[in-house]
Length: 62
Image (tube, rainbow, N blue to C red; front, side, top):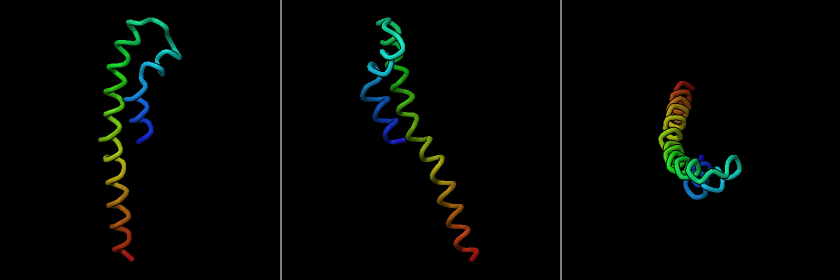
């Protein structure tokens, strides 16, 4: 997820140029890719916390 966040925020234009050469699409897509990249941060949190608490609960059961 960390790599995805970096890629979507640091080189969105280069990623979009793989699929299109239209400058308007690249400009709009760059803004969208920044939102996608930032959304990885809460997604990681929502994936890690349940696993952490589940493992902690299971350790207490033993």
